[in-house]
Length: 198
Image (cartoon, rainbow, N blue to C red; front, side, top):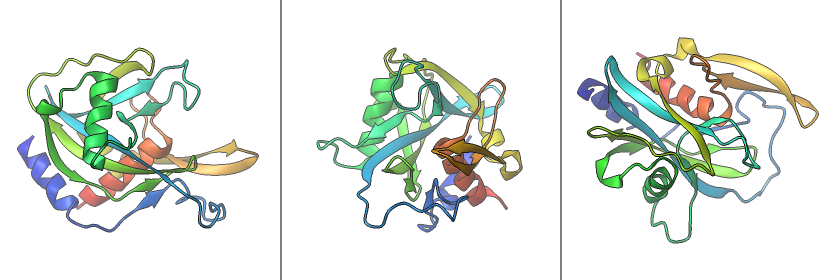
């Protein structure tokens, strides 16, 4: 795990590389001057039997926004949150029961802009010690893990298309077993994989 953490620290040293849901769709740009709402997600690695594993959630199918989608623990920044790191830790504690005392912060990636008007800051972290998730049933249907080697390999990612709001939109996917990882989650992971590539 320590070798992976060292690689991540080096990869995150470059402040460039902001991304957006519009990267693969240059013909579709958001309105000029729109206000983005700050948010943060925790891209957390835990020790696994075969190496580091990424902790992801499947959102509740009862949610109004993005039901059933695969996501990092995270959410919008509250006025009382002093930083993006604080937002990511608070949300991870609320959504999956992760004690902030177990979390070792590694760094942050540049923001990712979503079509829904959020500027998401991905916070990269390591979970120290055993962790048994406690999903917040109103928001999280399932917590699962993916081998980090899978999402850290750019060759694992595909570009797919679907019609959204009457137009074809392209997006990244990086499926794992029964889990269809796509959209902003896959785009953030693709950015991280690109940084880690030799």
